[in-house]
Length: 244
View 1 (cartoon, rainbow, N blue to C red):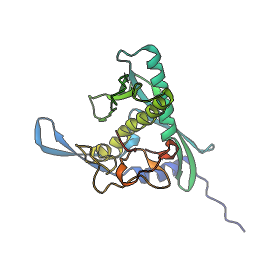
View 2: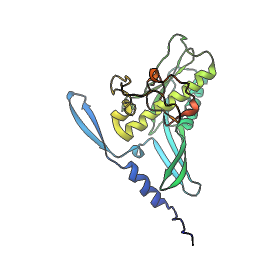
View 3: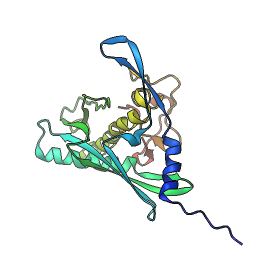
View 4: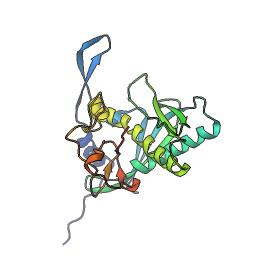
C-alpha cells in the first residue's frame, strides 16, 4: 500500500515559507546628526517591502511577484525612456525569475517589474553616449536617494551589447533593494559579503568566478583569480567582474 502524499495547502505553504524568511535581521545604522552613535534596526524580511506583492497559485505551482519601480525620464528622449523601461523589465524577469522549493514542492517564481508612482522604488534613467566613459549605475536602497540606471550607449561597439549589459545592470541594481530589506546595509552594500560596505572594494577572501554552476548576480568576484568566460546565461539571483 502506497503512502499518500500530504496535500499542500496555502496555510502550510505560508508556514514553510515564513519559517525561512521570518528571521530577525540586525542592521546597524549611524544617526545622521551623531556620526559616532549607531542604533540597531530589526526587521523580518523582504516580504514586508511595500513595492512588492506576491500572488501564490497553488494549483499551477507558480508564484507571481510584481514589483513597482517609479521610472523618471530626466531629459532623455521619449524613445530612450520607453526602451530603458522595457529593458529593465526584461532584465528583472530574466535574472530574478527561477524555480524554488517550498515545503518539498517546486514552484516557478516569475518576477514582473511595473511602472508605478505609488509604493515604488524610485529610479532615475540616464543615457551615457561618451565612448570613452563607462558610467556606473547605483542603488543605495535608502529613503530619499533614487536609484540610477545608466545605459552606456557609447561605450559598447554595438547596440546589442549595450542592451544586454543594461538588462544585467538594472537587475543587479534592483537587487540592492531586495538585499536591503532582507538583510540590511551589510548585505546590500557589502554585496553579500564579497566587498567592503563603504569602499565597495573586493575583499581578499573573495573568490574568482566559479568554474561551473550559476554566478551570483549580487556578489562581486575577483576577476584576477579566475579569468574565465562568463555568459549571462550562467548568472542567476545575482555579480560580475566590475560589479555595481
